[in-house]
Length: 83
Image (cartoon, rainbow, N blue to C red):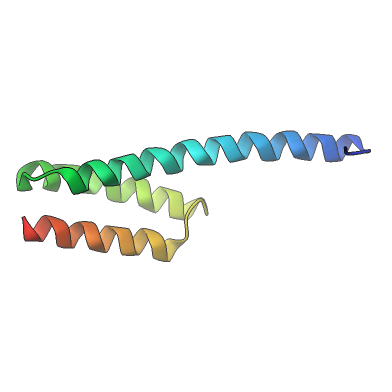
């Protein structure tokens, strides 16, 4: 266990950030999954900007790597064009 007040505070902050980041990452993963499952082009085209914005925001906050966000957006765009 930590011996300093600052270390205890850092542990609390890290846990809070971990839960916060986990929530947003999971929400984005579910949005990507939902977009991939969509078989209608119009609905997918409408959803894509929102999902792309979510991924960009995660990359900006270093929750996911910027290249991962870029790869996901690219694959989703290919999926939409195939429909």
